[in-house]
Length: 157
Image (tube, rainbow, N blue to C red):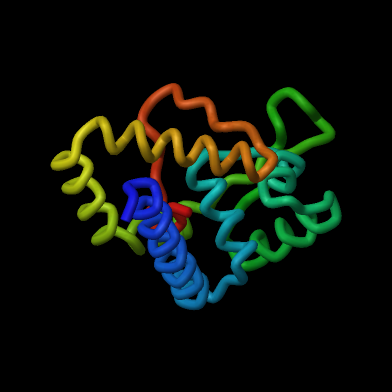
């Protein structure tokens, strides 16, 4: 088997496993997939406007508004006034859900740290480039990477 084909097969296996983990995590937290993706986006980016969150998730303004209401009612996020735009707000995770998301994948995160240390920077570069390519092909732009990415292991897909 060619190296490229093996890599594609392994990535496909990883995608399927991660989709199953994400579904299990959503069930465990009592969330729909889009709700979980929104929380992970906020965990990864800290805070953002509803329009930015909607763009990231592919939701209309009405869709992200409904999503934000559900997450706020459930106590998962809070709205804060935008510091520079009075017409907008910032969405942030509550400390309780942020802690729950952080603890839910500790075992996988520990394994990823071990593997990263063992395999070294070449794997980091490969995964970064694959992530950039996937984001680009999905119609987005690769993320700016000022430092090490903040990973949420259950959604490495």
